Every structure is written in C-alpha cells, then in structure tokens.
Length: 281
Image 1 (cartoon, rainbow, N blue to C red):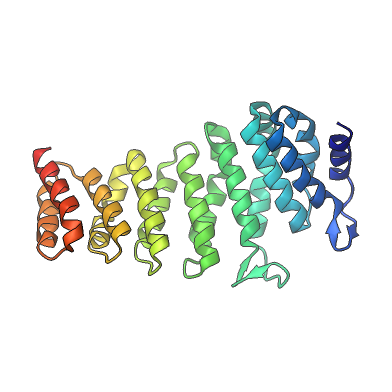
Image 2: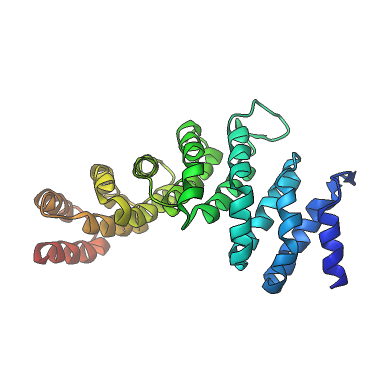
C-alpha cells in the first residue's frame, strides 16, 4: 500500500525533468502494472490519472491516456467518471494534434506523433461505446481524422485503422460508418497484404452495421478472391458469401464460377463449397 501511495503521489508531481524522464511518466507506467494485477485498486488512481490528460509533454500524455484506457477496462466506475469529465478535453486534444503545425520533435513521416493519435483514438473508443452523448461529441473529430490523414504512409494507415475501429465501435452514425467502410475499401487496393487482410476482417464486422455500404466495394472484394495470397483469398471468399442477396446472386455466382476455372488447386475445394452453398441458399 505504501508503494501504491508513492506512485499516486508521483503522478501528481509537476513534470520537472530528471535524467530526461518526467516522474509522472514513470509513475504512470508503474501504476498500469498495479491496476492490471490488482483491479480493485483502480479507484485510487482515477483522479491523478485524469489530471495527466491535461499535460503538454507528449510522453506524459501518452502514458496518462494509456493509464485511463486501462482504468476504463477494469472499472465501470472509472469509465463513467472519465467519460463524464474528460471526453470533451480528449476531443480537443485530438483536434489540436490533428491540426498541429510541423514539429520535428514529434514528426514521423510528416505526421505529428502517430503514437499519441492512436492512444487517444483507443481511449475515445472506450468512452463512446454504449454512450450516445459521448459518441456524438467525438463525431466531428473522427470525421476530420478519417478525411485528413494520409493513407500513403505506414503511420497514416495505422491512424486510419484505429479511427475506423473507433467509428465502428461507438454509437451509430450512418455517415461516419460509410466513411469508415470507404477507408477499408481503399485499404483493399493497398499492396501490403497485411493491410488488405485487416481490411477484410473489418469489413466482415461492418456487414452487420451497413451491408449496403460494404456491397459498394464488391468489385474490389472479388479481386481479393483472385489474389495470390491464400489467406486473403479465403477471407475475401467468406466476405463475398456474406454479401450475397437476391439482387446480386447471379452476378456474384458467375464471377466465382469463372474464377473456379483458373483458380489454384488448393483453393478450388473452398470455392466450390461456397458456390454450391450460395446456389442452395
């Protein structure tokens, strides 16, 4: 208990640098380990953790955001407190970050601190899930991040992926979800197999929210069925199967049958099974 009290005290120390590492940063990292091991102690860290969200030093701010995210996972009381007291401030912080001028200290490939971007998006996701008011307050900044972030850079794609996850997790906003699904559609045209596979997984989740928006990317998804990578082939085929309805069944089945003639031997069994299942359905 004495150690815990010491960490809580250090969380409140002004970020005076000692060996280039602020005390609150170290204390926040240690506090993360404490609440993961003993979730019942979470309530002791809520107030000092939320105070870190006002820090300007990015290292302290990142660890503060990460600590608050973990508190939201282990304690419903902490989640409600942070949601009520901090959502608007986090939205402002993300807005300032997204619109900040060039800063060599935090710049990575032309993007200001993608690590902080991602941590903020994950915390906002936790706060918006299941709460309409919190979700509504972050809609504008999520749309801004989704439209302004460059998708031709690794750091930009990482931010866009987290943004899409957040949009798909918070309470319903039809326009935002279409925007998120369109980003995933662009991911399918990326040369990186990992990005395409992640996009297919996310689109599979998105079908239940807005199947029509996903169907607009049918042609790109069908191209993934013809991909050389076996994992992408199979995942894309599963997605095509889910997208079949009375309107598109003939066109999709024809595409799959045409590909059956030229597909790899290893893939033909899966493809044939899905075609027969589609016809049966």
